[in-house]
Length: 441
Ligand code: MAN
Image (cartoon, rainbow, N blue to C red; front, side, top):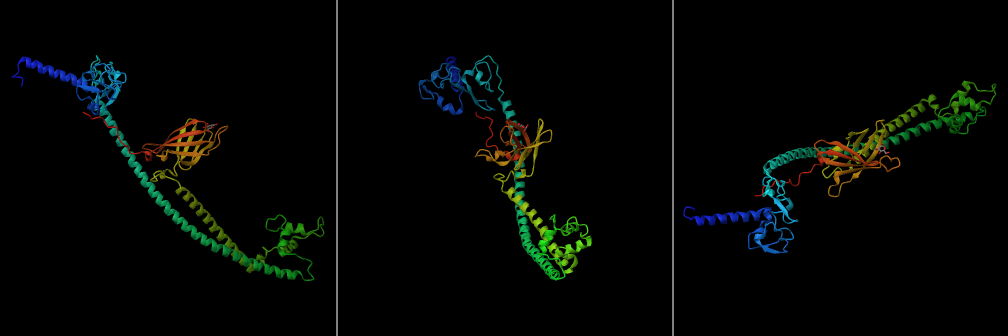
């Protein structure tokens, strides 16, 4: 190409090339790709805010013409201007244009110090590599945490199903015990009635015998006599009680002997009839057995009832949209901070144990307390032990993402108001968008 040209022609070509490089570098410096369309070389340049039209060669001429600083993207001339660091291989960003050629390397590609004495190195490649490695590391860790989260969700689903099945079984046991209770109550009532009827019959027979003209003992009714004699109301009559009731006071001569007291006592004591009559004895022991059977089943029913109640209470708690927090139930986490040992039992309570061993409630499970878009990032525990001359103790638990599930920190930002951090993979969220390292050309 140059072989045929004269020296004069060559000078012109070199001048044109240098001019175009100069114009191009002036035009391009400090502009992002997306803004390039505003700086297409024409005769004139319209300030980006539309406020002014200037000749194009006044762009980046180190004199500020536009109010918005858009005519000087590559110089420090405009106070409101901003310089775009392309930073190929790393992240591009803007810096205030006052930092252009100020002797400090701001852009990692050194583009902001194009006319300064400072020898800036292009460090974008190294920075980019380091950042990519970091991002990869974080992505790997997050991936592992999300895998753990998935396992805990699956564990939660299984536990939930197990608990539901357990509840159904307990309900069946409870229904069965209820039926048994109905039968046993009837059985007990029947047996007692039988025993009472036999006793009444026997007592009636004895009263008839006692009403004979030779008898000087006139009981009103067996029960009232029993009550009369049973002075300490313990349900049994002792020889001393009979002697005390039937012997004239301070009259040694007419005092009842022990044998007389036993005989007289027996006449008014329905229970003791069983000792004499085998039929009554059998009926009483059948009634006692029915009572014991009933008591046994009542106890079993009570136990099952409590288990059902606890299980229902447990299943009524909100464990997250995928029941991902269910695994925290029945676990407790401790952390020692200064002289206190703090314990968080999720969905149950928070306590503070002092060096002296005193345990103070910092609140009972209240509710999820995160913002509407993420309610499961905070838990509120309320109505703990009242604080001396202060409020009731309350605790806010912040759930944060981490590999292990553990209590990470406890603070008391204001008196008797506690804030804890519970770390768990269940609180990890997939990254929406990683900040990518710039690859704009
Ligand atoms: C105890 C602890 C503290 C609390 C004070 C308030 O010492 O529960 O956390 O601040 O009581 O008197």
